[in-house]
Length: 230
Image (cartoon, rainbow, N blue to C red; front, side, top):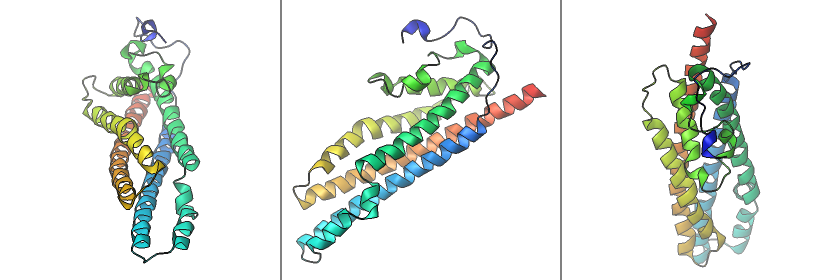
């Protein structure tokens, strides 16, 4: 998408479109975010358990059978690559579905010109390399501003959420992936557990802020639709 698609020259409402109900999508997104956060905590627990087992094994307090059993139980399976991908992709889809509906409503409330990016970026921004470093932030912050009762609403909450999200996914997560690929020593296992702790804290903070954003935009839009209907 080129820059000519970023906005429209009019504040008129899109012809023929009606407001979308966002409460159900918001609830679904909130639940899926919570599931993703629980998953992150389970991965953290699994990584620390691995460290303590490795420590005990080297100290003679655990056997190879103990390590093998832990490597094949439910907790280890939850943290495997494909289950993790399924959890995060499902949560992402839930958020995007909510954001798409919220974007349409925000255009009806404030006009398409209130948005810097064309509607297609609501989906494409998250999967486009390099662009996914800042365009999702623009999409969400524009929906935030366009949905607020006051046009001068602060965006500090959006800034904090996006900063945490970027640091977690584009800085800390790649480091943790590399660390978990090979364990040559007990220190490697401990370092992986420590980095996973940092990653989980970032995910928890970003996830909770995103839930606040989703609920607040949903409340603004629901209230705005009620006022329009009245």
